Amino acid sequence: MNIEKEFFGKVDGGRADIYTLTNDNNMAIQITNYGGIITSIKTPDKNGNIDDVALGFNTLDEYVNDSPYFGCITGRYANRIKHGKFTLNNKEYTLAQNNDGSHLHGGLKGFDKVIWDVEEITSDNSVGLLLKYRSQDGEEGYPGTLSTELTYTLTNKNELKIDYAATTDAPTILNLTNHTYFNLAGEGSGSILNHVMMINADNITHVDETVIPTGALLDVTDTPMDFRTPTPLGTRVDDDFDQLNFGGGYDHNYIVNGQPDTLRLASVVSEPTTGRTMETLTTQPAVQLYIGNFLDGTLTGKKGSAYNKRDGFCLETQHYPDSPNKPEFPTTTLNPGETYNETTIYKFATE
Ligand code: GLA
Image (cartoon, rainbow, N blue to C red; front, side, top):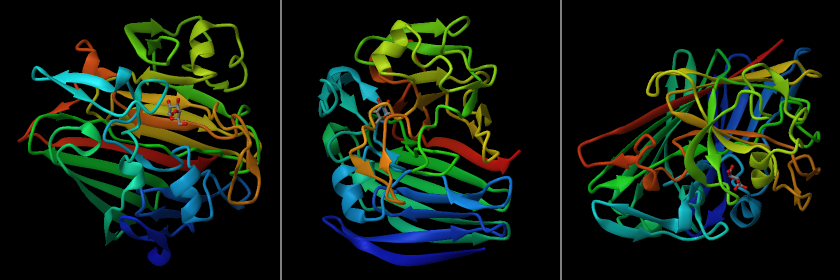
């Protein structure tokens, strides 16, 4: 096991390094402190061949200028807030409307575009990085000075564990996630529609045409949204179903069965040709399945291949979108004296 650090580049907020975390099985993950971006995940297939299963770029400039949130930490509020407005303790706040008139992924300069402080952590069975960022009161329109500490850990069980912790000095809202795009056949190898997906969710949040929850829950039974039985992502993605039209394909918030705040299975994905599998476990109430519907061939990945529509999928563990405007959803308010704590594990294996 070890951690190596290399210079990645310079940006406004300072110096970006790239850290390579390697475990005893030669699984390796690279992370940069710019946006806390996971830039690569190298893991074996069923024959022992190592490949990179995370979409991304070779250069910092591309992450700064072109990235559709590849691998990054998204915050302060991952996903959408309708019209970029919410009311907290009788005061209305306005955030950037950076997505179809609504707020997406923390705004114009979210947690994906800032420089995080880094400490390396080594223990008997894991290597990791502690990332810290202090977001000032009013940053991107959000109230409260927010101190976030996030730990990425690579264990000898081939788990990538992400622990989030945050505190605030004034009431605020918070919803953090990681936005890695996976392709278990290897990034740049084409479509992910053959990946077999299981999602442990009886319901999704029903959305309007702007992909914002209406407030209703939709029981997935007898719909193309149902992944309780493992099903290839491509089997029903183009079915004529209003929820799929609105997202341009899967781009929906699945409410993970079981008790939020306890680590439980959210999803299992497998890729038939390489035998790679990935389990997702989380304490978060939900997970956004997004299948790269907006990739359009204009970005070039690490191996030089264009990323086309549906060449990667994300499993963004999170709170429900637009929760600040939906009192019936689990709260995303964080008050002084409270600590936000969430954990997500992506576990890689082969079958
Ligand atoms: C999230 C959203 C998608 C899209 C991507 C980034 O997954 O749900 O609609 O905005 O981020 O392209």
